[in-house]
Length: 340
Length: 106
Image (cartoon, rainbow over all chains, first blue to last red; front, side, top):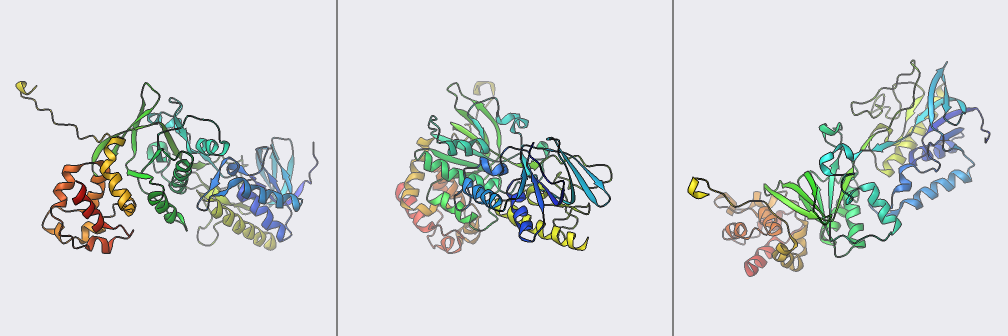
């Protein structure tokens, strides 16, 4: 077993873009930190993505840049270890991992991110029943792997799968599925130029710089079609293609659309929190994401002093928002440690 | 069935088949900005004709994409070609050219 120090100023839970960015920021201010990542590789969800909106930068490139900086700075990282419990001892914390380690830390940064919605819960969409129903995560893989697959003539993308849906248990908007769908539509059109790509949306929330421009580019340059209406149900034809039953809410008429592939834009859900002892009180928002102590004045401090949140732990965020939030969290930690 | 006092009306379901896109393709090829419509309704709200007759530019866009030609004709006959719809369009759709192309192709 590799040996680690047992005492740190900050232990960061999660080695995704937020955790890594926070560690680098803390390093710049001389704070000794440790990253605990449950997977064998650093990078979190980002290592599964192909390209990033809005500039189509390779996700691998972003991860490898940050990881190489971590290696360069000889930062302490433990991978393949899940945090099993966090206990408070005086005003410090004891963090135990599945690999049998235990660490003492003056502060803890929760940066363990999110999980994607399980689309089998929306049975009517046919995920897991029909092989041509795929998730947005699987499509990233298909685009990344350049694998040999039968070329689809028509692809439908369903927005808001598991988001803004009380019946799926999530009232919140996952924020980036809209722009991801537009990005994936363009990528699919470039990979399969003869295919017809159709997005089924309820709203298109193009909230950030370059997103609306990307949407316009998808419409005018790539001829991506946008139909306003949520999928009611999907069924399979004898040849394996799929029939979508949707309401075209703009004309007010029902619509049947045949597609070869159906892509479900799965939303973001709160990831499981580590097990805290009874004296630790980390409050959650109604959507199960971590609730900051004060969203305006102290957005990275949880309701428990010394435990901070960075990245998508406190709600859906894009990659650059996650990185910015993690840097802000690092600054809150520095402030806390200085006053301690 | 009608002998029993029942009437069956034609299904209003849009089948959205590629062979129905001929008109939409002509419009899109000749005026690519037609793809940019987001159905905000600015054009219809500003239209002088729409106050007195059935004329809603954003519906015309939709009907072209869904190949509902009868409905397009119904709306098109009320247009006075003033171009106010084009002035207000937030996405720069060349509505006048689209109306002209529809007159030629429908």
